[in-house]
Image (cartoon, rainbow, N blue to C red; front, side):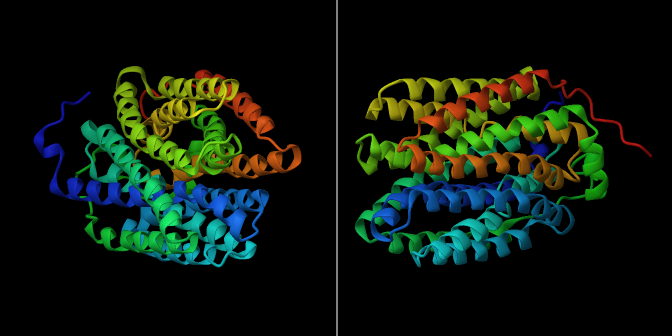
Length: 406
């Protein structure tokens, strides 16, 4: 592996990395704090658990469907315009949630915020950083981006809970909309790559159709895409329904906010560790171990009595494994296909993730409505995660970049 040198971190990369980390932190913090609004909307707006769960499921489906298109737009035109438009969509979506109607929740919190997150999350931002970073530091830069992006959850979850308690849930949404608007201003810090900044496959011109055809003929890519379904299924169920699960177990709302914040801070550490391990063990092995350890954590939490202590320990374990999938997934795509079409290929893989997220959020709410508990959903998380780990272990090592036909 090439040894990084001081000029491996040019000012354009550093400034764009700071901007991308800030945007990702705000976007992920806002999205993962929306579960805190379930209980006040159920109590004060008459929204059912199943309706809220379906809106979050719709959000993740819109995110997944929109991600390949947002990634392709970023590959071709750059990320600034994509982020600015997505920031406006985020604000409009939060406003519609504040109307308190099921239609506003599904249109705003579901469709609009889902598309907005597609334009302000990893598929767009990792692509921007990848094209600026030299191969020697690309993995480190992506790990730093994913780690700093998780810090927003640590700050915004308790902030959102405090705003709900001090103002109202509608007032809290207004405060979050101001933060969402700030992403558009930060996008002006993005810089473009200088000639020769990223050697090798990164210099290819973007060609979304050809890139997708090559990727779908690659066994490792296909297996990783199928396994990625479990990641969305597990994480979005937890992000959406953990606050409600904690509430029905008799714990106060503050524990939910603390758990989500703990996920955010532990995620920063876990993502950096994952980036380091990918350089030592390979992307395939690290990704399989993440699925296995995450599923084991879910199984232990489900089998133990719910208390403040077990909830916070579970949140810490899940946080450590939350976005740690980003370095190995990004490394797999960049290593085999280069950076020119990263946004498109990440979007294709992420669509599988979001199909899992859709089912995790929606079926979690339905299982509670039908049975009065989340037991069925927790068991499903364990089964799906186990299958994903087994699949990922069967994938090929990424090795050298995949040869491209003339």
